[in-house]
Image (cartoon, rainbow, N blue to C red; front, side, top):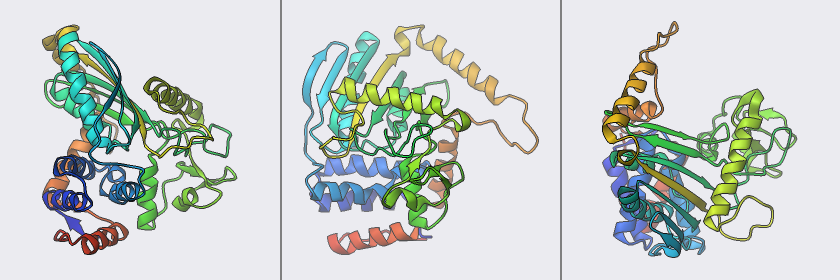
Amino acid sequence: MPTVSHRDLIAFTQSVFEASGVPPGEAAIVASSLVEANLRGHDSHGVIRIKQYLDAMRDGRLHSGKQLELLDETPALLAADAGWGLGQVQAHRLLDRLLDKARSLGVAAGTLSRCGHIGRLGEYAERAAAEQMVLIATVNSHGFGRRVAPPGGTEGRISTNPLCIGAPTAVDPIILDIGTSVCAEGKVRVAFQKGEPVPAGWLQDAQGRPTTDPGVLYREPPGTILPLGGDQAYKGFGLGLILDALAGGLSKGHCSRADVNVPAGNAVVFILLSIRRFGGQEHFLNEASLLANFVRGCPKAEGVNAILLPGDPERQTREKRLAAGIPIPDALWQQLAEYSRKLEVPLPAAK
């Protein structure tokens, strides 16, 4: 499996998007977002998405150079239509505006409809935490990507609908970024590209039978991803269901349903809380840090080296991959090599 430095992979990815007609500033935002996801071990949201984005732009389902169109705005609220613009670009524009509002008022909420895939939600929570803000975020797939069946069902009815909540501490932020399904669809796609089985408990086939074959999601009739929660999967499905309703309903986008006839993308909800304007920054950071340290100091079971908090695995993986490079599955490497040839962009050196 080829391994590439993050700097070379960012430069390559940005060049691929620029050669495909994306303005340099937007190409830089998307490239950084994708490679940072790889650095943190979330390969499902990394450069594997290049093909998805370029195919969508070629087909006219996704566009660069789009500005946000305001649907409504108050001192604490902003609702916008992203015009099927590049998701990371439009989501960071929304966050820019909300950060200004939350600094002034202490709270701010915003939505995007008709937005391209915005990537890893933890990216936005990390940025908010650096500004001493709490971020609560979710997206749905704008009615598409119905990969998750309700408990007892055999057909997908909602998308994987993640929930992200990030909070600062005096040191590293706590970043909870989870799907309401057992795994993200992108993780299944990564396993499919590698030709590897997925763990037991992730998938069921079209007849509702458990399987470790990732190909069931990409054959007809398709299988589905199981909701989070194991034998209490109704909890994960219920959470995904209400997040679907919030993302589609609040944004003036779409919730999951059978007759959606728009491009696949995200409907987005961001809520910001300024820790300075509630209990005060010093109090919040002190309490959150005491809590984090209290949990990390829990007595460990035999064979456990450390107690990890949400965000710790991503930081650890980032340190390792900054030093050793980012591994690229062979099938994905072949895709990148094809873009290198077609767009005349030098392929990054592989270790």
